[in-house]
Length: 87
Image: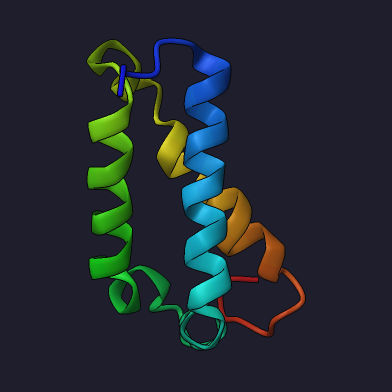
């Protein structure tokens, strides 16, 4: 499989991976937001997703942080309704 070389495709992949994390880890995400330990609870899942992202995307796009941005948009921003010490 060829590496993803466009920014748009890299963003889509990052969002798809983050969406899968959200879908399969809803309870952990809610707990993590409530207790401000989200990234500690999901460290293994996040790093597994990061490894997948990096294996599919051309190295020159890694520094764009699309994966990290997708994590914030999908795992954090979407849980703005959950009570948290963060907000």
